[in-house]
Amino acid sequence: MSDATENLVDIYTDEETKEPNQSPDVKELKKQMENLIKLSGMTESKTIQSPSTSKQILGTNKTDKTPESVFQQNRNKLKQKLEAIYGPDGITGDDFEACPKILMSCGHAVDPKSLNDYCKYKIESEDFRFTCPTVTEDGSCNKEWSYEEIRRNAFLSTKQKEMFEEVIALKTLEKSFEIKQCPRCYSYVERSNPTNLSVKCIVCSADGGTEYFFCWQCLQEWKGPFDLADKCENKNCRNQDLEILQKCPLIALLETEIKNCPSIRACPTCGKLVSHNQRGCKNVTCNGCHKEFCFACLELTPVCQANKPGSWFELCAKPIAPRQSSIPKWSHNK
Image: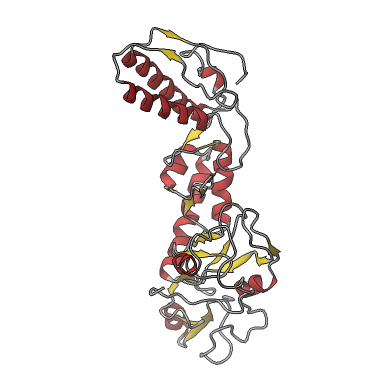
């Protein structure tokens, strides 16, 4: 959108909306502005400028038909929507003012193409909790978006939607109920003991006449004693999560005092691997158990803050925890 002044009613036209999926937000906003004009009794529109170059979004002459407080509230809401739609992309941070975006349920706006890429990244990371990554003065927004909202607003083809939903259903099933496919018959097997890597396939055992066990970690036929918890005796069986923790680079959390911190952490509650986007405060929320913990000292956030109140961006009371040498097991009591 240019810096040239424009009429209030004509400022957001369909011609400015390049993508068809973006037009509903713009049309709805235009409708709200027209209603506000009627309710407030505005007789004339002053010229306005781009949200990024002028704080005066809605400059108008009005009568007393609408109380001042109500008018101000409505005007401020429209101002926020205008700045969001024509402001930076909430996912990438790119500021393409002339390209209106989609308003999400949290109030932040994103480009549909960025939302598509974000959806792909989440699924590749096996993280099926879609949260708003927009960074505000108080840190990341982190409000959750439903998949229905993602599906409605992202530029997903029919094949992409089918693939996303199939992968999400399968991975959610595996993580929520400790279920994997047997490497021999491909039937789904549930692991009853999360600390035991040896799992019996009932189907293969019944068909073959002898009990068949496979390794939950390397998905090969089990070798070695049945009480092994870290790996079986297959040569290529290894705990990949533990290797990641031991080899990940050190980083600085850019907006905090934290430096030389491992870039990957295992959640102290459930053991899921978590990374920090290096923006905002030092705390992160696990996508597995949804517990919030300090990325530096690995204490749950309430404990870290109790030890040193107000230290959201400062060093903790405890030293930065070193690389983890084991994966925490799920604990409902933490």
